[in-house]
View 1: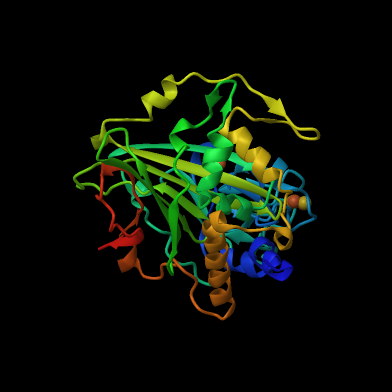
View 2: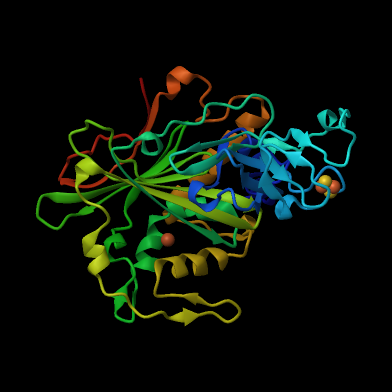
Length: 395
Ligand code: FES
Ligand SMILES: [Fe+2]
């Protein structure tokens, strides 16, 4: 990959091609559980310093962090009077950025009507906080069934990794790493024996996603593990698309978003949704498994090579916080990684030409319920051979 292409797909700041493309979508900027009306929180997304706060009415704001008066950080502000009150001279701003009060100004002054705090539109859905950091009218916030439904349980987790988001998105379509990085026995146990699949897989790119399909021998004769994993632009990775209410098999959902903090840091949000009809929550076999003691390795930076998270940190942060892709040597096993880059580059280039980027929803009629049809399941041999992963807009 040429250096210019590497820059194109990795840089996320304002004015960059990928950054401006990302800003055309609703993006996850927090979990509902992590922000309450007791205190605001400084955050950084797409290289922008921002303030996230919840007002006394429960509404969430994502704004510039410094007061337009004389620049104090609103991080020290008070949640009251319908918004956030700057600690310095008490100006109050609501979640939309309107200035509601200026205690030091004459009572009849209209000065406050001329002041605005830059604020992005924010929505909460299913326990996640979403923001539209772009210009003009926001598209529809996708009504993913796993965010809307109340016939099951949503379980979130989140972590920050000190590397560019594309290094983590690429990982989704790199099944060989699962076998080698996570399948190796450390202290006598592999971190993830269930991922020791044959590295034989097919990769496909469509207008809306890039995915691989791997099939390996199941536990009994005549059975197979059918595994599809998809990258859905801009930043979603789907391991289990799950099932819709009323489907014959109720299946869990397992998705992740690789949200860029800046060019060198990424916060991942993961969501598992367990439908009640499935009857299972989690994987008892996995929980019962012995946990090997940590094995810390590394000269400058230590990671636990006995845990999946430590292994992924070692491999991905070990590439450097923003890997120079002009120096790689890609092989047959990297064909999924190549498609991830190609798809995201195509999306960025379409966006630069002024075309609508992939997976942007503009019509409410199309947005009744959105399902990502990606399946991982133990099947009978030949079953699901013809299944084609896709995004389904349920009407
Ligand atoms: S700096 Fe915020 S009110 Fe003066
Ligand atoms: Fe991994």
